[in-house]
Figure 1 (cartoon, rainbow, N blue to C red):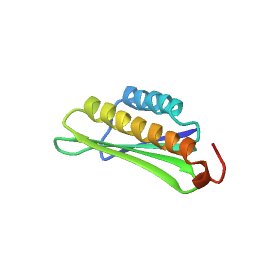
Figure 2: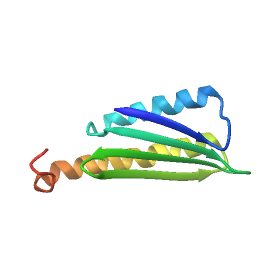
Figure 3: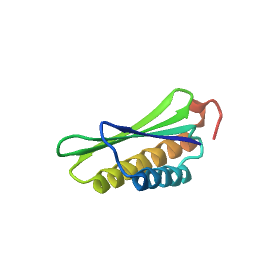
Length: 104
């Protein structure tokens, strides 16, 4: 899985980038079909925005977008949302193999 962390309009410490990369790598356990994961971190005047985009191939893209006052809250909620989406997509692919051209 390829990961990319983009920081927009603000300079976060490198430890945040490392934390985000670790969390993105941990998401792979929910769905092994992930081709790439992108994280976009942005800080406005008062809020932090974390957007996670997962490309699963065959045109499937999942997005988790969170705005919170604290960076940690935004990151963990985005990770949680993406994890739920990945699990749901994985379970759906197992239950409906015909829609996925026989891939289980």
